[in-house]
Image (cartoon, rainbow, N blue to C red; front, side):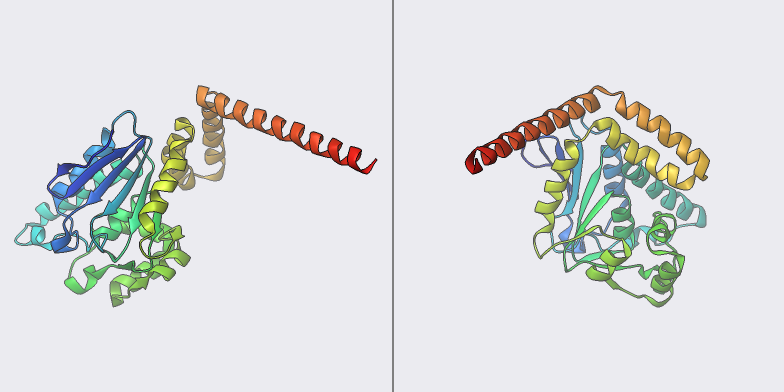
Length: 274
């Protein structure tokens, strides 16, 4: 399956084998996110094609996303504001707590709602142009797309408070050091690295991928003993899957072949020196 199509006005879609590629495509507004775009992404991951094992989230321009389309917040009531925020929480949870591991490509502006979207992905690959900011404080508003829950778990409450109170901008190197991204690559290299990582992820046991997305974050929030018990359950479930048995057999067969090859090399060496 191949070729690019549209999931919505600002989201392009392509599938390369088991990898889904979703592209934010609103360059005139630096990929500002409206509600429809966020819901489109959430709906895709809530009901992804059965043959998709990993995904890449990228952008068609030099910016990942400059954040929320602020025109959606004008002349809204307090209750409308609550519903608007909650309307982001569910789709982003579908990404973070879904069944498909997502690798995002971060370049240029990754700010406000754009940062909140990036934080919902599982692996984040940044290019040197990437920069991170939460300008909500200077605009008289508060984050509403999950940043107050996700970002402090990466960088700490004190650093997030600094970003919101002072408008501090973190560059790509600082983002890597603090854990906002896990990879920092050269200019223009982010997409290829993301596809490479997604391909590697797609080869994993689907049960293990599911456990990483579903169980791991929940275990991190549990008490130690409860977490250890859930770990045991997930270990047993993953080990009992057919794919795990196939991978283990492949590993053992490969190791046995290496031992035979090494023994042959050792034998040849003994004969040469005899």
